[in-house]
Amino acid sequence: MKIGPIIQKRGASLSFEFFPPKDKAGEDKLIEHAMKLRELKPTFVSLTYGAGGSTQNNTKDLILHLKQKAGMVAMPHLTCINQSMDELKAILEDYKRLGIKNVLALRGDPPKGTERTTPGKNGRCHAKDLVRLASSMSGFSIGVAVYPEGHPESPSLEMDTLYTKEKIDAGADFAITQMFFDNRYFYELLERTGKAGIKIPIIPGIMPINDIVKIKNFAQSCGATMPESIIRRFDKTGSIAGDAVEIGTKVAIEQCADLLGHGVRYFHFYTLNRSEQVLRIVTELGLQNLGK
Image 1 (tube, helix red, strand yellow):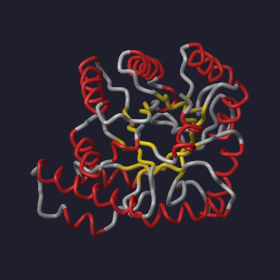
Image 2 (tube, helix red, strand yellow; image 1 turned 180 degrees about the vertical axis):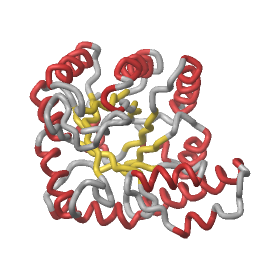
Image 3 (cartoon, helix red, strand yellow; image 1 turned 90 degrees about the vertical axis):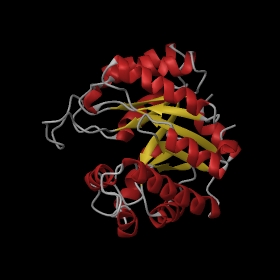
Image 4 (tube, helix red, strand yellow; image 1 turned 180 degrees about the horizontal axis):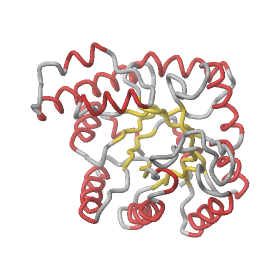
């Protein structure tokens, strides 16, 4: 199944993101939680790709497991930074041979210890270059990332919208947002992209909070605002993990309910390789009906 055309036709989707673990025990846990989430009948699942292609083999192996053994539509992330076009073309050809019809095309972050602005093997590679390459090979539905508050490196929201349109015009047919916690930014993104003539499905990326300190630091590093109203809800939990998960789950339910109320029918959850929170959020809101 090609994701872009299908979800555009349906006007709805449910999807989950996982990341490649560092060891076999972690992989077994990922598969365990993925199988639980399979019961929600997701439209597709995605698997991240380490900085500079550092998890390339793990990403491919797990994508094949999710596709062949779990029967899921599985989409690998692919980044172009620090990899040559020949290397990227070989990866895409390999995916094509294996029956993988979807890819999330990203510039990506450089490996730790290297400068963000250091050119890789492709020079200064951008996501639009990878989109153009994948599109030229035919057979792929191509997703891209979009940023409700603008990419941290974009000089303005206007320029961010321009860069977004460039990579979509290069051949992308759906987009997934970076995590956000204030829906106002998502609605403003839809308004900006709509005015720019962008008509592909834009899927909100939802990050359920299970550790407010870690998620707040992560949000800060990628330029996503964490509202004070949410932070205050965690002030009394201290180190009580169960309480933090309960609050984080309620926050995500409220966020998704508001999106539903505004007509949103696409949802992508950053699972952190867990299933409990997402299972509850999806079932309480009836989002499993969006998947198929």
